Image 1: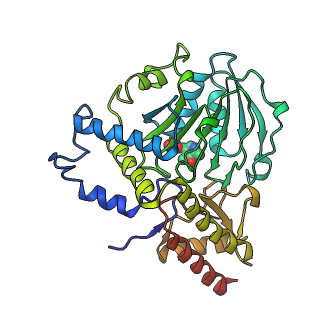
Image 2: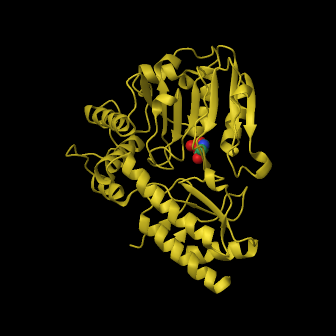
Image 3: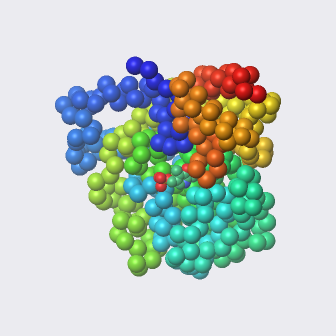
Length: 361
Ligand SMILES: *Cc1c(COP(=O)(O)O)cnc(C)c1O
């Protein structure tokens, strides 16, 4: 067996020990004679699995009691509609900061259900920075204020949260969930597709303050109403059973092997610093993002020549560093270094880049 270092933006690497454990439990979970993939979601054994995944998430993230954790499907993209249908029901207004494609999609979808305002955008420079926010420009009676905390495609992240006062702050944390501690109480709603940093694709996690549940628009489909899922412990219908199990294993790995989110952050900062410092000192490669807004998770870079970019991506792939091609909207390269990317993977990538520079610089 020869595993590669996978720098994919998502779905992405899972911790090797988690994969091994899942493999070991594949045919017979915990002596019950069946795989988690095969068991009824109404069984006692499965109830134990979903309960444990939720309590691990609460423990690892420090989620306060007055928040519900929902295990849903439909991806982060479904939340772009689900959020306005459930929250945009008082003034019918919401504010958006456009920091990339995902934030823009959240805005465009919300605009179908109410009055969506753009308070700032960094589109003028291909979303390579986080725009300054002026609270005077915020909509005072907005039903929510939406940000994308880490911008997967462009490699930026918010390092400071907007002060929205009483307006509920909502954040897409698909590509940074579990990468470092986060003060959940600053947010009214957090959501994430699991496939970047938590589990295989097919699970969406929503963390929502309880007072925001129960006010959905009349037109809201039953499956799009947070209340449906909150009232039924995320089991109104069949949940993504196996993905929830995998999320539980990943959370145990973070708690028991890594030592929690503070430790996870240290490791992620170390990995990112290695790559950024190489880029800052390289004569061939350069990062594309304003240094103060650089993501810990997604690191885009270029050589300045499309031809050399393509040559690098191919050579890297041949050497076992795969999925380094940048997003089709940006070009160049992007290294996504989520939790499961070992430090050694980044060390080896940097060494490979240095060699490539010597030969092609
Ligand atoms: C990947 C991603 C999405 C889209 O997630 P899906 O689960 O594919 O819908 C949305 N927002 C961010 C920040 C992402 O990284």
